[in-house]
Length: 406
Image 1 (cartoon, rainbow, N blue to C red):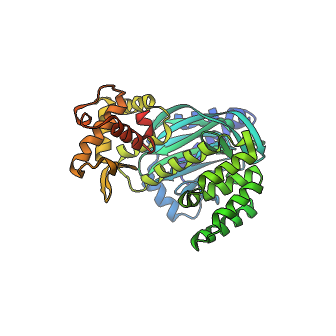
Image 2 (image 1 turned 90 degrees about the vertical axis):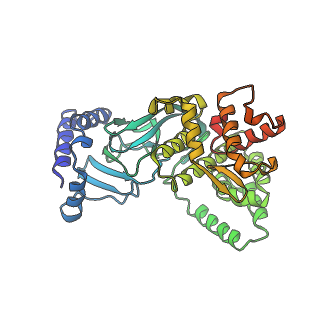
Image 3 (image 1 turned 120 degrees about the vertical axis):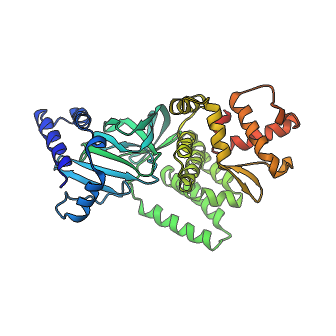
């Protein structure tokens, strides 16, 4: 066992024992211990990895799939210390069934905090309500953050560097804090550990029908939606969304679900749309490694207003006006496709019939115009009609860049 983490664990154990193992006091005990001797300043990562690989005398490792990977560096029946490596990880919006603190040992992350308001329990494993962001911050190497179990600490992390490494001092689990919900903004909370085997098999069978292009696919899903309870119906609707959209039947399926469940289903469409948007941004990060661009993706995914996004850009890059920084990133992320210029998933509209060598200047000018909220069009846009400018805005509005145009 690594000496540093053995000493850290012993210190936490000693201090927690003095507090009679109070769960309420453990986050502060863990935070103070990590701050007193920061892993980011005192752990030789290369030496730790070598020792972990070559020495069999290590703490019991969990079966967790969390981290890329997760290493347990200290283990006690009441708590343990884990090291989490993140290559391209983005955590779901979640709460915890444990408490403690985490320390950014290497790298940086965007850290967003949320509230879940007006919660209504549908089943023990699914709730509806309002997922609202409280604040968002940049966590850099050396930061330590407490973790409080339960709904009072709902958060997500978007890791910017490859790898990002966090050290977590955490309880095994806190009684009464199950399930450990994930939150699907803007309106849902689900239990990711709930395993409804019948729904799982139905999804697999629907996948089979999709692959063989079964003509009755949409009719079968619509019949299911009309019969299933809210929870199972939601998961089938979520699973089939892409295929139904391809077949032109998504609107009918959504309408059937909303008709069956009434007010309870009011936020489902927005939740599923937001899930598609967030998944698209997660997918982009697999091909984007430049730290500044990953920071941009993190903001696009997590920040809800243009003003907040520009504030965070200015905080990290104060030398240049934030609008100019965003426009530079947009230009650096431009790519040519068979259909025209693309910035992330915003594709220049073919209907404008603009030569591809002229599209970049026009696209960026339009983005600047929408970002600053200007009423007077820049020179590059004056040759376009109001309808064409509106079409450009529409392209940004349905893309991952939507927050920039407000």
